[in-house]
Amino acid sequence: MLVLVAALVASASMVVRISGEVSGLRRVSPDLWPSEVRVVDVARGRITIEEVEGGPTWLTVGKTYGLDWGTGSGQVGTVLADRGDRVRRTFRLLEGSLPEAGTVARYSREAFPRDARRAFPDREVREVPVPGEDGPLPAWFVPGRSSSWAILVHGRGAARSEMFRLMRSTVAHGMPSLAVTYRSSPEAGGGETAVGLTEWRDLESAVRLARTRGARDVVLLGSSMGGSIIASFLERSDLAGRARAVVLDAPLLQLRPAIDGSVSTRGVPGFLVTTSIWVEKLRTGVDLAAVDYLDDTSWLTVPALVFHGTSDGAVPATTSQRLSEAEPDLATTHLVEGAGHVESWNFAPRRYDRLVREFLRRHADD
Image 1 (tube, rainbow, N blue to C red):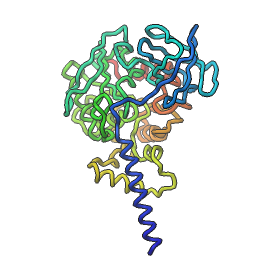
Image 2 (cartoon, rainbow, N blue to C red; image 1 turned 180 degrees about the vertical axis):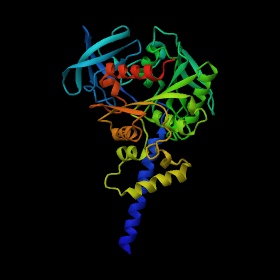
Image 3 (tube, helix red, strand yellow; image 1 turned 90 degrees about the vertical axis):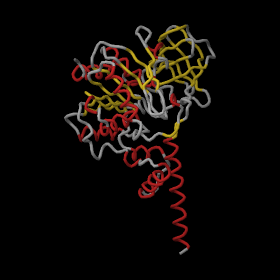
Image 4 (cartoon, rainbow, N blue to C red; image 1 turned 120 degrees about the horizontal axis):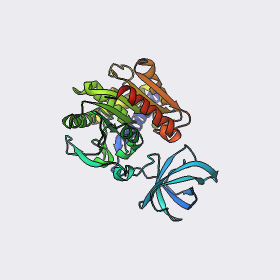
C-alpha cells in the first residue's frame, strides 16, 4: 500500500511539474527575447563580436545574421576566426555608421531592423491597424501591384520583423505584403497563447482587411506558431477559400513533439504527459490536444512550400516531412542541413529566396 501511495504521489508531482512547464511554453512576455553581443572591432568588411552574459552563444553558425546597434544595422556573414566566446565574421553595413568598439548590439536571425521603414528603405511602408477582438493589432504594410496579397504571421514570442526575411521575397515579387501580429504576442502586450486555436481569428481579420482593400486572394506565410495559426485558419475560417497558397518555415503542426522536446519529459511515461495536457485544459479551457494538424491534413487544400532545419530543437523537422508524406501533391518540404529553429534562411539565404520566388511565380501570379 505504501508503495502504491508513493507511486501515486510521484505521478501527481510529475503531472503538476509538466503541466507547469507546458503553461510556461504558452506564456509570452511583452519583452522580446534578449539577443545582445558586444562589438570588439570592425573594419574593411570584417567584424569581431563577443558574447555577453545572457546573450546568444551561437555566434559561429549559419551564413547570414543581423546586427542592429540603434544608429545603424548590418549583416554578419562568413566565419573568419573562432576563439570560443569571440568570433570574427565578414560584415556588410546596411545603414547608418559603423559601430564603435564596445558597442552592445542586437544579434539576431531576423537579419534586418525591427522597424520595416528601416528594413525596406527604398519602399513605401505604412503601419496599419488590423481590427482585433480586443483592439487594433499593429501590422506593417508594403504596397504592391499584384491582386494577390501576402499576409505574414510570426511565431510565438517573436515580432513582425521575424517575417522580413520572407517579406523581402514577397515584396520583390510585387505582392502587397502585410506582416501582422496577433493577441498575446509581445507587440500586443504578451499573455498566454492558445497556440493558434484562437489567434486564427486575428489572421481572419487581416484577410478580411486585405479583401476590403482590393485583394482578390491571399498567400499566407508563417513561421513556427505562425504555421499553427495558418493551419487553424484554413481548418476553421469561412475565408479559408481565399487562400491561394501557403509558405511555412519550421511550422508547429503538432504540439506533442514540441512539448516532448521542450519540457523535461525524459523517462516520463507518455500517459502522464497526456494527463498534464488534460490538466492544462481544465485550468485554462484551452484544448492543447487539438493542436494537431498531421493526424488529419484535410485542412491543406492549396499548394504549400515548407522549410525546416534539421537541427531544430524546438519543432522536430520530422513533422514537416510528415505533412509532405500525407499531402505529396500539395506540400513540398525542403530540409536545411544544420539549421536550427526558423533558421533555414540564415543558412542558405539565396537558395531560400530563389525557392520562394519560384513558388510564388507558379502559384501567386495574376
